[in-house]
Length: 437
Image (cartoon, rainbow, N blue to C red; front, top):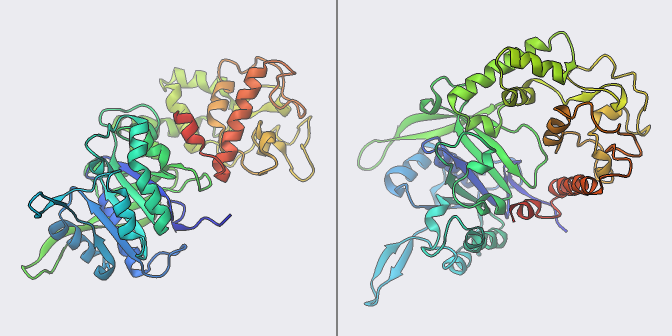
């Protein structure tokens, strides 16, 4: 066993493959170079504080007129910047320019970089470096092609950042579903980041403000970790005269911005903002039953799926009144229902305090943690707080699922979900690969 180390906590773990996805022209390559400059100058504050090498493998940006001017603007140390080139040998012995091909060139890549003090490897975009025979939509084929990246990450203890795009014209679904090509790209990554236009920037994709958020992390605890950046224009001197370029700078945290918000179309984003304002006004007087809020939302023309998104921004976790015997209620974040201190069941344990602060199924995770109350609650809450609000039996301390010995299949499903959540927190098993298969 050994401790996990980070290039940039909680975004990029060392020795692992990560993915950076987003729409074109929204700062993904700029962010990669911003990180590269910090690595070469020792500007990071986590586990890499001494200057180290970076490797840039780009299929789209020219090194001379794009990559190098941007690195100059970021004050990178060029002695530590390695731009990888690949040559093919013709039958007559001459060398011609080529592109890295995975998995064919995997062993050569490992041999080239293994002896260097590399801490960041950037492939931009990663799909350009797959062998021609690789079907980018087939899970097994992509996994075979990307395996060398995992090998080189482990051999060099570097963070491998695979840059890619998101699908166009797909508005619904989870952010991970919008990453192009096979699910293997995000399944193999230990951290998947989404970068795009700032939801609070009125200029949208044309604006200078961008946001980076975590869409998936197998190794970091859950939480709001979005960061806001700004694209800026400048010029740098060269032997042939000034070169116009641009660079990205970090502005700070972006509270309440999630990966899904970044990829949300402007009209849906506006509807979400309206729903958040309405929900805060509706719950300003105190907690209300979920069904009452749903009826009020329908009356005001708010789609329930939009209200559930707004709830993530404005509200705390829904709770069931009087020790789990009544209806589901919802209220603003940071507030408590009037009946919360009058609980017939009382605390589950003197060391645990009010059991409302814990998830209703968290007893399955007790050996690991006592404070992971919201890790995997969303889907189960939405199911319970809807049409089944007042149906079924009442959960108790001995029977937290309210099954009373019945529905063994449902009990096993929930227990399996809890195990997957536990494994996701601890990193013991590759739970997302199981789900993908």
